[in-house]
Length: 71
Image (cartoon, rainbow, N blue to C red; front, side, top):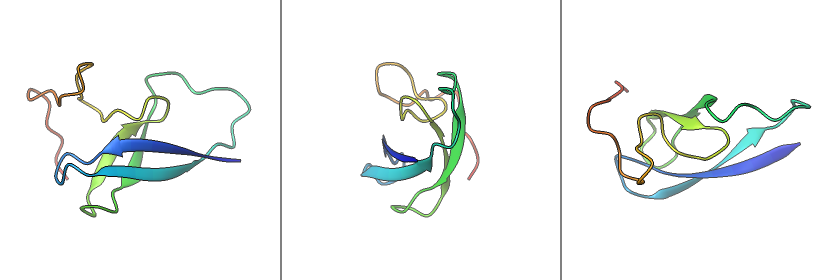
């Protein structure tokens, strides 16, 4: 079964839709991140598989400037 997540590309600002294979019987923990090849900028982003927030993104929706992952 597949499901979709939405996230905002930090490079382009575009809202990106990505499909995840949801082959696990149980729900993943909220702090589980998956690597996603962004179709907007072709970089690799780490996205929370439950919330769609990027790794290092503050709860306000703005990226946390203290944590920057290399591409």
